[in-house]
Length: 432
Image (cartoon, rainbow, N blue to C red):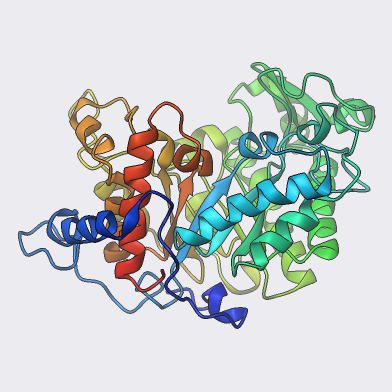
């Protein structure tokens, strides 16, 4: 079923999706050349007649001008690079990010507001993120989220708050936890896994706290939605929740864990809707559904199929970070971008939309497959995948991540070419 709830935020906010200036350095000539190339060569481009088009575009959410979701993830990595010395300095950096996204023809930013059981805004439930001052629990003296929202909304961008529900510490970050971090106030709620510390997904009280945090965010700020990433169960180790599983009497560990995650996701969705039914709640699961089910214990099939009062999500945006032609060592092409996209689109859906996460961080470096290396070094990999998603019937796409396109020191030339190709694609679709 097509999603009809999401509208183009340019229209919803009363702004026209006018033709913006192309990205600095791209130039009209470069964009025009890229536009000509895309019409001739991209897999899935509607004008192709060589049997590789993957179908014809429909009038659904993926069609130009019909509410296509075009997003970028802005992670804590980018946010850590901003200047928090004053509100004015922070505003300059935040504004530059939002202007880049708007100039690229995007209509949505997904901004990471809670990376480690903390917050980039004043919260009664979570300590200040160490991203702001270097010390978790110490704020910068102003509200970064107020500024981020103003800079996004002022440019016609929809703003979704990206929350990591369980992670408290990982990879040595934060270097030290604030006394008000849940690891300190409720150590009985936590489990260690690898080099990280996480809330135990088996504990209803821990899940309820996460949901309270979702409700606090949507109550206090005019975000347009809430977004969970793919970090759910931190480990497949039976020991992390053995006591809770034994007490549950459930016959199957994997099924019980999936129920735990679904209960959290459903409750978060309902908290968002209780605040404002027009707000959206979505999840970006791993691109491999097998891993979602058996390692993350996120039941993506059930989430997509649920509707009405049973709805769990408004959308899923699986991370399809493989290129066209991706081949496993055993010869399987299941994760070829076009194939795995088709697999997700074939999953039964009620009202939930299906978007596509695109791996901007792969440009230049590739995805580990020799067959796709040339594509990731072409300068138009992402634009080709975006076009393929639209033609296949996906409702939109998101780029992971902003810095890979706009602050790529390893492949600056390729990043610039990818921006130009994406800008040309957007111009072709009337969003620049």
